[in-house]
Length: 331
Ligand code: UFG
Image: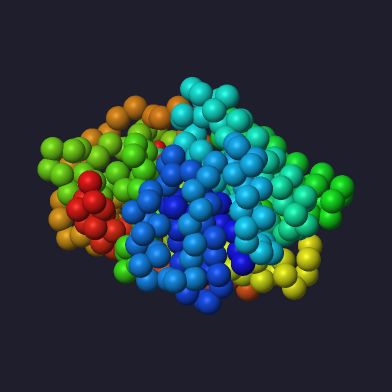
């Protein structure tokens, strides 16, 4: 069986479906602090090979119980806080939840002789880009506590490999968008800060003006450029990483992005085009800590994992829109 921590969250839930639909048995472990029980219900209504175990990684006994109860052979680890701005304001919460929580998970794994993990890391480990596109060897200099927690965990995993032979694949995501709305899952944050859902929410609520943060970045149209990768493509990459780990039994790291940059303005224009409607727009001050350009060099994932991107930007936005309509009925 596969343990998926944070499986009730955005990226985690898409991975649960990817593994479950391929016939693998999954245990979701989630404290539901940012994940949603409704997402778990939606998955379980279709996939009978998915079990849900509520628990918190900060309590080691919660996760010990899972390893005692189920025969887990690999962990896919998403459970974490992931809001950059919040991590600056409340760093302690991030170090405790992300780093301590992961330590409990890793210790429990070692004690139970489960020695394979796929870890949800982030482009935030690189910090301000020194060159672009960013490959896996780019210097790691995170500029916020969120990115620091993820880098600390990667380093801890290296030490656990040396000491206990625990093999890890770290997947460093760039900007994740889209939704598997046909499975009734998608992005659902109680406080939404991300670009695509914010544009869509403005499209669906006439008094909510979408704001572009900053217009004088050194890019072609003055707005920030990011590498937007579809969540279903990302979920497939986790399955490929899991297979790589089983085949090679080696620790490794892969960037996950498309290497195609889109500016904020381009994403806004594309959304207007996909929806076929005007969306109220306002230009405002820059947001603190946004680098001008973040682009992935994902050659390694493409060659070593044989990862292929299937969803276009247009498709991802359309899927995210269909999901927003479903989500509106949940709230
Ligand atoms: N933006 C707007 N208006 C909004 C929301 C976002 O103009 O309402 C802009 C941002 O300023 C930024 C771009 O859209 O230029 C993308 O912003 P997001 O908040 O969607 O994503 P980030 O690039 O800030 O963050 C993402 C992940 C983080 C991860 C980081 C890695 O969400 O978890 O990439 O660098 F840490």
